[in-house]
Length: 315
View 1 (cartoon, rainbow, N blue to C red):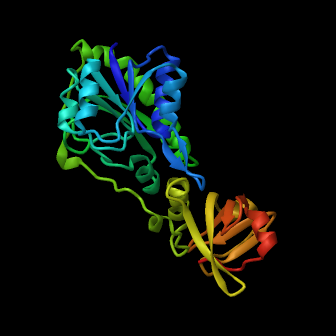
View 2 (view 1 turned 90 degrees about the horizontal axis):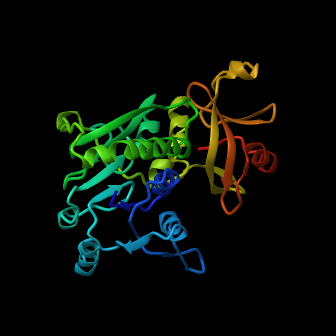
């Protein structure tokens, strides 16, 4: 099949790796060019770029998709079909028209639910128990094109953004491999989305990661599952009469009975150290902080942080 793969993220790279593992390699990859990273501003390629280089796949850098030089270069490749997974840029109509069979988007939700930039994070934040992947034909709107296939995926109680992303990328790639040849041969049922059922996600910012210990334990746990990777979850504590940030990288939802202790919910944010667990109270239970990162320090275990600080209250 003569097709082009478009992607920039870790999710994209997992999809592309699955395609390659199943001898379904694209003829061309479109991704963003290397960016300066770190203090030394070293030019660094993204994961999709590296995968394409390692597999000798031609690359076109699409930093400016309306640029005439980019569009002319793509036109000369004469690619039939585009396959997109987490590209992170709006694809202009002028570019879509260059693909005779259009561009198929591998979207990690069951459309029309969770259109937009953060479907995986939003599903976790909302405490959903099921999600999935939808393949649809890209249009000028936001994730509103006709659907050509979907597959459902259970969300496990301990799934995080990283684990759920991997599951959805894997099943999305498998769905694409199975359905794209049928689509190109005109043998796939195409159905329109019901716009009245659509919900839209937003791009989460640093502010969204602030933990409010006055929320329920389940809400706090869902927030950490969804946002600890990006943009990050955090709270504050006082040390030497100064406010410091504590990033929370990993946590568990704890029911006091499971620890064989009788702890009534204290003031939200109260730290309780028990049986080598660094526990924080919410309005109705406890959060077990497994991996944290104090301001200016490396990631450490919750108990290690406790032993070094003896903090009594987080906020």
